[in-house]
Amino acid sequence: MMSYRLPREPSGPRTTLWRRLRRLGVAQVADGVVALPADARTREQLEWLADDVLAAAGTAGVWLARPTTAAQERALAAGLAAARAAEYRDLVAACGAADGPRDLRRLRTEWRAVSRRDFFPPPEREEAAAALRELESRVAARAAEPVR
Image (cartoon, rainbow, N blue to C red; front, side, top):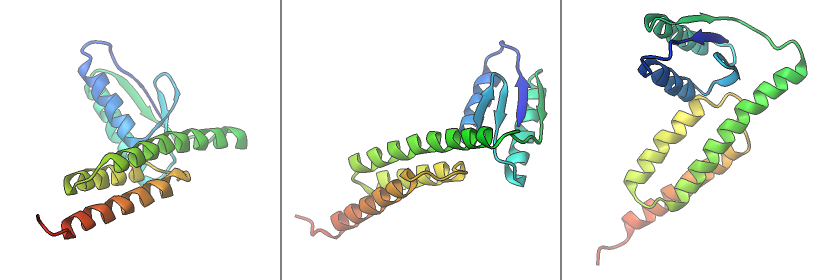
């Protein structure tokens, strides 16, 4: 977990922190308290963000914490999975609307970004993988068509 507090002004550090936390896929536990599953990578990332908060005249701390009940742990995991499921659904929709190699590259990059923050993979992950494979097939078929 990371707890933090940043001054309201200037707003730049708050916005930057919010974007970085979002990119990490944190669970918002309370105002100024976020959580990620504990591993060396997530701990290091939260420590870097805490250093950034301190450099912006805020306060921050990184904590090793455990939910006290299995229900709390399940709720936290379900919240993280639901957030990733929504991102995967958006990816499926984007794959359906895409048609070119540039779109394919962009969506593969997006897939990798979502996968990095996917700690509790939902069923939508496989749907997104299938949509990417379908897009790859469409792009390959279009490239193989003779030029008229």
